[in-house]
Length: 321
Image (cartoon, rainbow, N blue to C red; front, side, top):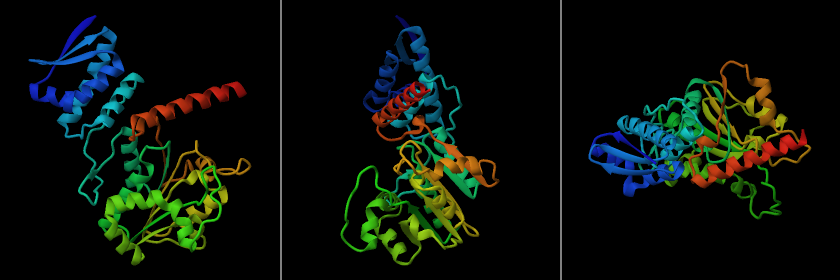
């Protein structure tokens, strides 16, 4: 058993520990150490190697606090997992406020992967975001669209996704065509409601400034002066992907998001998102951003589930070989 003190001011020590010591409990649990607040900083006890890792997390967390980063359980979990994985990549804590939600909550990237994603959107006309659930692919894309619309960089927002059932047959759905496709569009509606507010969303929808529709509606159109998002792109066929990409008009920006580990197409059908990576990886003005389990910003359990599935898929691939 060893003991080491991480020297910080009392006020910074309290911030590092978190509300009701919530940050310290996360770090202590991850590294098997015990953290206590003392007069000249934080006292960390445990095995020497684990103490060093815990202090590395506190050092990164302190840098974030000093640079004005929002410190929450997600950030602590992200920094902890980075240290556990031996990732010494420098964390960029520079502020990158994207927009503010209807309730006044600031929206910004929370991981290095998300920051690269936002930067890619700003730099390129077409950005592909590929990664597991919970990494903020769709929400950040919609946030960037709302930001561009508010800044009058585009005159409309178009959100689309293929209407593919996720592994189950829903059967006959009542209502008109819009009512039938609404369940598939729900994640996009949710993001827009949160960012714009229901009344503003409805007003812009009625004026045709916002359009949320299935991918089939895109055929034959040219989308000028628009911010276009194709969500759940892993469920497009190669033909659908090409059709969508050739809709992009002048003064427009497009984002394509998807998770190639959750393809709901028939086994005999190829995913357009898988194939497009080989076709467009060297085209100017296009960037592919790959998010990983480290970028998950949902419940910590989601991150552990994704890692477990990745290990299972890797083991299955090795057995096949």
